[in-house]
Amino acid sequence: MFRKPPQGTRRLGAISLAAAAALLATTVAGAPASAAEVEETANDPAYVIPGVDEISSSSNFRTIANLPKTGAFESESAYGTDIAFQGNYAFVGNYNGFTIYDIKQPRNPKVTSQVLCPGAQNDISIYGDLLFLSVDSSRNDDSCNSTAQSATIKDSWEGVRIFDVSDKVNPTYIKAIETDCGSHTHTLVPAKTKDKIYVYVQSYSPNASFPDCQPPHDKLSIIEVPLNDPTQAAVVATPNLFPGDLGAASTSGCHDVTVYAELDLAAGACMGDGVLMDISDRTNPVVLSRVRDTNFAFWHSATFNNSGNKVIFTDELGGGGSATCNPTIGPKRGANALFDIEGEGADRKLVFKSYFKIPRENTRFENCVAHNGSLIPAMGRDIMVQAWYQGGISVFDFTDSSNPVELGFWERGPLSDSRLVLGGSWSAYYHNGFVYSSDIQKGFDVLKFADARTNNAEAVVALDESNPQNQVSYPECDQVLTARVNGGLTVKSGSTVCLDRATVNGVVKVANGGSLIVYKSTLNGDVNANGSKLVNLVETTVNGGLKAVGAKTTIKNTNITGTVKLS
View 1: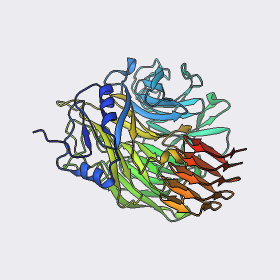
View 2: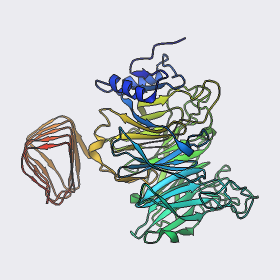
View 3: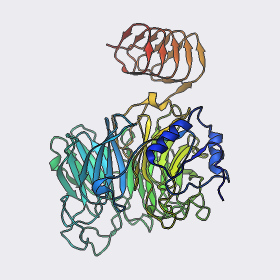
View 4: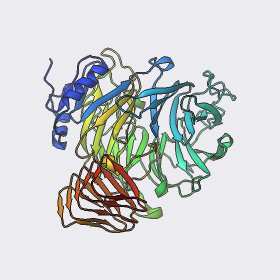
């Protein structure tokens, strides 16, 4: 029996995506839902599971655009996979190759080019003019014209392909590197010097009958890529993460590794184990801490918080092809596990804090489980956006790692009401103000999460290049001001002060080495920031002048009435 959706939830009928976007745009007016409202909506017994081709979301989430799969990528078996970003482009993997999207205008994305190069799953990364694809499908050769061939044949190939994408319209295939057991996923790792990068290759499931994928395979394959001649890229190390068979019985390699190179840390999701690694020596990662969980079926991926003192691991129960978002499976399986990193140096340990799983029930025809996501760089908070396949996309706050709270959600209904069709959001990432999603069947989605707790992220950082499994830091707010400040403001050296819809009456002084980040605020006085580290002014009014000589400065949609001196 049809029940009216609870307050704060939109439910759209089977209409065109363009019409859906237009309707959503007209129904999102007003203040965003509070955390309590969203949580109440998500757990409300009156919540209605959307039907086939329907969209449901919290009131702070809306559809901006969708580009369906086309051409050689249009079939049901041509799964959309991961996303990387650079400048005004998004690079999206597909089991049949990859697509480059122009996202200069997020509300009107366009296909720049599409490269047909089959080889599941084409996990994707970008670095300068180089694009990397993972091939975990045994092929008869390394070309884009290859066909499937059994891994029992010694001459079969799988590994990593490299493309030159300096010309976004005409990418060029330049190199292939074979790796043991192929490359299910890979992670770009900056070197200590600027003349090269490394690629950590994750693969698993060895078999004694596979000449190039022999057990026990408790290792990574590490590729070194000379940037002045990437055609010389080659495997330079194959470190064993679990010497002496110390991995869990279900571990035979890693599914994914996320690196935080600035902190010389990596988090590995290694099938039966979650590991924290020191990667000070890029070709010789050292396991610092290893954890297991009886509720976890398959350690799939990891995400650090910005401070690097927390890690979220995901459990891909059912391999991503099963319906696990239901009361039978429960809230602790197919979920996220949140860990704090405690201790120092070689004594750092992963300490379990809690689980997080979307609180909505899906039908038995919807594959749903925790999958790929990234941080939203909100001021003073740890917030993540995450894909859950046909469970949709969730945004949650894990500032308190013992008590994560969902802030909003967006989901499509099942692809079918009679059979389980593999689909839904494979990856959902925040990038410079928008959420981008690669939907396995529906193509490329652009979404907007409009919420007072995260909108200020646009002032914190704008990334030119982003590979979510290679995390880079953004400014950490030591203090977030949201009210009126009289008598001016002084930012000390080494400190970062953030303003979110605040008012400062008086002069703002930023000391050498200090940082000031301002979003939708009013500064009634001069800003003196010569020699400071960073000054970001976004959607702000400065009733005075600005001096920021020597500072890294971003000024966007900001009115400054006085003199501006930046150099």
